[in-house]
Image (cartoon, each protein chain N blue to C red):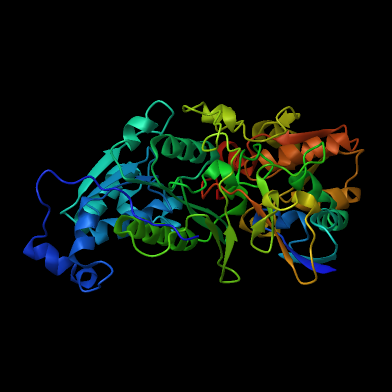
Amino acid sequence: MATKIGVPVEPAAKPVTLSKEEILRYSRHLIMPEVGMDGQLKIKQAKVLCVGTGGLGAPLGLYLAAAGVGRLGLVDFDVVDSTNLQRQVLFGNSDVGKPKILAAANRLHDLNPDIRIDTFETELTSANALEIFKDYDIIVDGTDNFPTRYLVNDACVLLGKPNVYGSIFRFDGQITVFGYPGGPCYRCLYPEPPPPGLVPSCAEGGVLGVLPGIVGTIQAAETLKLILGKGDPLVGRLLLFDALGMKFRELKLRKNPDCPVCGEHPTVTELIDYVQFCGIRGEEAPSMATNVPEITPKNLKTRLDRGDDLYILDVREPHEYQICNLKGHLIPLGELTRRVNELDSSREIVAHCRSGKRSADAVEFLQKAGFKKIWNLKGGILAWSDEVDPSVPKY
Amino acid sequence: MAVKVMIPTPLRAYADKKDSVEVKAATVAEALAALTGQFGDLKKHLFSDDGKLRSFVNVYVNDEDIRYLQKDQTAVREGDTISIVPSIAGGARN
């Protein structure tokens, strides 16, 4: 798609220049004709908002700050925990327990003290998104959940701002630029999110630590290209990255004339309730099967201790079983349909997984298959570790 | 006509962990029917109860979205690649 690129950057009140120190710092940019003094001044005047300072936000923040983006906004309300360090390279051991936004701002300020860093330690919501976005030229979506992704998209479309999009799962990445004038938006690609529980979440899937590094740096490259107005932006193209096959593929993305937010007759003309739109009632209930019979870890322990004949069914994957297990019979959820004959419906069965979501689906399936004496271990092996046996590692 | 169907990572658990499957089909609908015939568990992830392709799953023939071709009646030719591209959100644990 031949698109004239570049975002309008407001002229500064007084002429922007580079100091002698900045000229030295950015010399590898300045000696390239595609950037040069004009380009570096554009970068200096640019205002970019990174939504999320996690796996994608880390390389984004680092490279945009290093490149000299004059004003960098960061939105996050999370706290650094030790499971973040496998991929969120903005943070170190000493940051565990600190607000991400604080640790990120400190690191980026150290990397480049000349730039302005705005911090928004808040959850992005329909009430604050437009207000936060309005001062920025480009929004970069480094979030990790569907409600926020639809919110970022709609706010960008309503404000006419480009949305540099990246998302990841296991070894796969998707990258594109939405919300560019004349180009498609996220809803053109996916009008609706998947219902909770239908597509495996990253909790079950995991993510290769370096993957957000690759996807986030591609987002950073697209952001700098938009600022400079150089090259072919990822507008109207969805870049798919497969780290296992080490392949990039490109699919055509079209603007949908019937799109509810950017189409010819939009029905979404203001921000909506995205949590409701995505069908998630709080973070605790993302499973489709919510009304299955449950047993608490403590009750299970009591019953096992007194010698009740309980059959433990573990519906996780074999590699998870290796991390820790309750000596249950392993049938991964995806194989349950064809291996159901391994189970004896006359015995009492307790199904479990890591957190209780997959096993709830398993219990629902087995109930439909005629199993009567079946329970879901509430909270999964994580709750077992918390409430019964702390020697079982959590993951 | 032999066509290759690319299975995305989130759905491989329901397709014997395969990343692609070769099927014989003349249209996208036939290819997806052959695929779900082979892997029954995939069906509910691709289609809603009324048999429509789910709106968070896009299907491409080579690099073109079938919504802008003839939808599931889009013809496929020998050697074409059908890609199933579901929406993914990110790296969170929730």
